[in-house]
Length: 447
Ligand code: NDP
Ligand code: 2IT
Image (cartoon, rainbow, N blue to C red; front, top):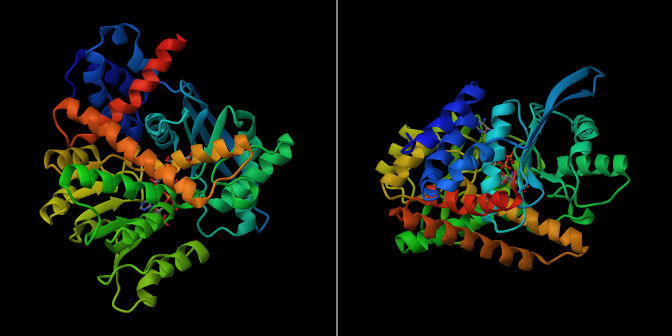
């Protein structure tokens, strides 16, 4: 697993300290495997315990969230915020509301965020938060009361120059609006403390589209460089049907590809004629319904129970945009057997480590999450700049900056991949490119 004694020792200590945190250990292992080559070249880094310091979050907050449902019953959830690393800027990262949320998931997401935010080249440290609250089936007023109670604790830990949360799974424009309203009420302050805000109160144009669009800009650049091709005429399979999946579908289609499948946690739809995105937006964004509805409304579209089956659909490009570990080694083998040429990750850590390595070994264009999905947080960074300057840029301005950032992230990750001797190892490339800046800032600031 590791080539150096140093990485082996760091990992063993991490396992001992975080025994039941499978997702966190998985993300840490991947990062350590990439960084050991970098650290090996500079013995001073081991002496200064840089890997141990990097892997330990600066702060981890867990709190109680009590709220009342529409029937007047008391409900209790757990809230979290990890403030992972602030070496290069205020903590920045999303909030996830999903019943599976626990300390391990928040820490893996926070750790990934540190490197992702560094890759954007914007001055943002890494953080992440959320709750095991399940927004599914809740009324608007229940969502509002939950968000207000959540912020009533979170507000004391965040601020526009301290920690700036945003959305993630289960947290979109509606939730950010309620969270922002409560923060403003408590602090009596109108500031850019959250990103992904509504356009009437400081939100940035193109933030909604940014993660999905950015994913396609990254994938297109990687396809150009590594396979001398692009999205035109390609068949694309995208998992999930939330914010990232919807806008990845939109951009892939604009770039000339045909997206034939989308999913949710219950199952997937296959439409050989190409997904009709207006139907998906109506079901998901307006009605907050299930993806199976699509097959009821679109002639010849098929619905299949079980979300895993989506990877058995033959495609040129696969974009996993749902959740962690949704694509394992078996799925990777099926995709490669069916002729996939690119797999770029819209979700965070959607491929297991074995699946990611299989893609790299087989010279598939593999875009690791922290590089490929950085467009969302990059545009959050642009929202922070607009808020500080009290102005707003046009959609075209933000989109052009997003595109530049994604192309640069690819180029920087690719340059580091080339140094490893494998042009397709963008995983190691992204980890090293992201780490270098954080590491230098940490060293310069002392302990
Ligand atoms: P949404 O809540 O809008 O959508 C999530 C989608 O993923 C839904 O289709 C959901 O299905 C599916 N999903 C969620 N959890 C699971 C699960 N445990 N098993 C199977 N399917 C699941 O979230 P986003 O689109 O914002 O986020 C998707 C992914 O992208 C996440 O990994 C997130 O961390 C990542 N990401 C998001 C960014 C953003 O800006 N929003 C930025 C960078 C990364 P169902 O409705 O059935 O739960
Ligand atoms: O995983 C991610 O990068 C996000 N959910 C977006 C974070 C942000 O601060 O915009």
